[in-house]
Image (cartoon, rainbow, N blue to C red; front, side, top):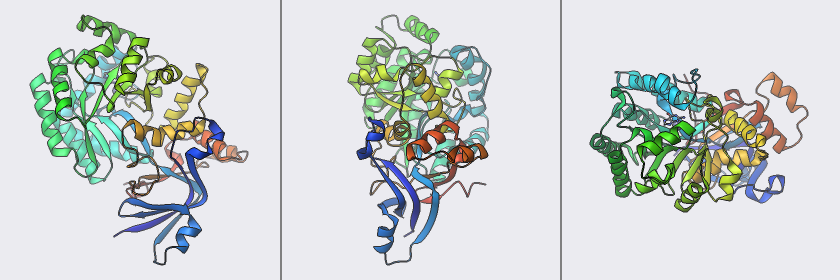
Length: 435
Ligand code: GUN
Ligand code: ZN
């Protein structure tokens, strides 16, 4: 039995802080808090003095004052084969995919490449305080094995899937409806539920899947009703026009996924920028999640995610980096760019809501609340330690910061991987022990 008591300022949400500062009933904040962890799970959260007094045994105490301990960040949409795509100079989505992304992803059929990138990928997630991600692998089975092997070795809770794509891409990136189905099924058998690993059925997006492949993706979804499904939806206007050409019978883009029974409460729809009211209502009724990818949407020039409109339509939402369309692995950078996108649309977004979203909000979007995303008894002990004075400029700015909310806003605005002082994966220090 391994046991550790983390001491520090502790912040954890148990609901969405819709009323800004007045939402004190939605989170726990302890100035001198303790988080007791046994065998990778949280067994108690309370004032440090109380935990200490109630524990006669000699538990190892790690004091992180003056830093802030929070649940690890969750990234709901990221492409691990795109580490070497970040920052590619392209016009818009289709050009970016064809000129850079599809070229890089083909390299995942090369011996050794998936392992090399896989190892670098998880180092980067840990460095940035991301402890769970919903990730796309490439079309190649080997890329999925490399991903899970590394995730499992590090004991990180991950959701991932083999991309299925059988048209409108280079031959080196195409599977077939049958092989996509067979490979996905074999990967589910190998990895879903192994340790902390979860599988996601992953048809890339409607333009790169034939009707037959989407049909078979729907079959997989029916055979494995607990599984996540991840894909892209309405990121770019040329993409939407292409989908209308490819599926002339469809009412709209969303209707394609609806038709093949790919919508549902465990479906993650990347981007969701250019949607009609009818599509919003279809998505809301299905319980699917719209995933906001701010740095990607700005970098590829896709458009502005209209969170207020989605929320008014009762569409569930999440936030993500979308590496390599996205430009940073950092959820802090992502929250910052998200804030700017919302602000320019007149949608002020409170820092408490941002930090809720990157933790419990995203856990709920993944249907993993109670398991990750908040410090509740029995939850898995993925924790990050945030240092608001991580850089000289932040240190100077912190001299005028008086409240927790101001501190959060500062970390969101100026923070990055340097702000993450330590990361615990299931109670084990992971950032300070990176090679
Ligand atoms: N649409 C289909 N594939 C992709 C991808 O890899 N990245 C982004 N941003 N959009 C996509
Ligand atoms: Zn994506």
